[in-house]
Image (cartoon, rainbow, N blue to C red; front, side, top):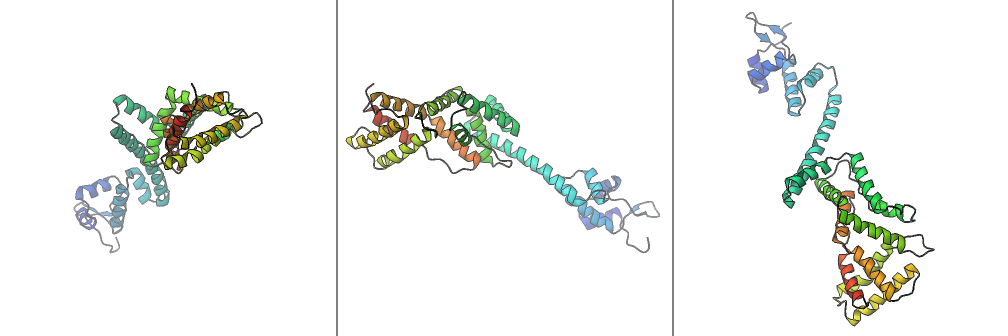
Length: 312
C-alpha cells in the first residue's frame, strides 16, 4: 500500500465513534470496502475509509437508504442530486404529517366520533383536483341557473378557497371544516337563498349586483348605532331604519312601502345565518386574507329595528 496507514475494523470504530458491528455491516454491504488484508486475513482499511464512514453516518442520519448511499460514496450519483431528491421526498412526508396533525388536533378540540374522524381524514387527504371538484360542486349547486348574472364571476371568486401548496396547520383545519360545510344540505340551502337574492335584488338597469352593497350599507349605517348602544326599538333608531329602507328601495327601483320593508326583513333573515360568517372566517384563514368582521351584530340589530316597525 505504498506506506499508507491502514486501519483495522477496531481502529475505524474508535476513530468514527461507530461500533465494530456497524463498521463491519457497512463493509459487508460494500459501502466501505477494505483496502487490504492482514497476514492473518483480517480486513484493513485506508485513510479514506474514515471520511467515507463519516459521510455514511451523516447520510443515514438524514434518512437515506443504503443503496442510495452506496451510489453517493462510489460517485455514481452526485451528492447535490441525491440531496435535492431527498429534500423533495421529505417535503411530501412533512405535508402528510401536517395533515395528520391537523386532523388529530381538530378531533381533540371537537371530541369527534370515529365516523367523524374518518371523514375528516378523507377530506384532509384530498388531492388538489379532488378539492377543486368539491368546491366546484358546492358553488355550482349554490349558483345554479345564475351563471349569466353580471356579478356571478366576482362573487364566486370571493367565495373560492385556495389551499396553498404548503399550508399551515390552521389552514388545513380550516379546509376540513369548510369541506364539511360544503356537504351540509342546510347550509347549501341558505347559500342558494342568498344567491337567488343576488339575482332578484337588482334594478333592471343595474349590472353590479347588490348584496355586497346592501351589506356595506348595513355596516355604515348600523355600526355607529351599535357603538352608541342605541335600542333598535327606540326613536333614535328611526332615521337609521329609514336610511336603510330608502337605500334598499333605490337598489330595487321600488317604492319604500310596507311590502319593501317585509322583503328587506326576509333578505336579512336569509343573510343572518351564523354558518355564513363561519364560512367567510374559514375562507380568510385558508386564503391568507385578513379576518372578516362579523356581520351578525349588524344584522341582528337591523332585524330587530325593522321588525319593530313593519306590520306582519
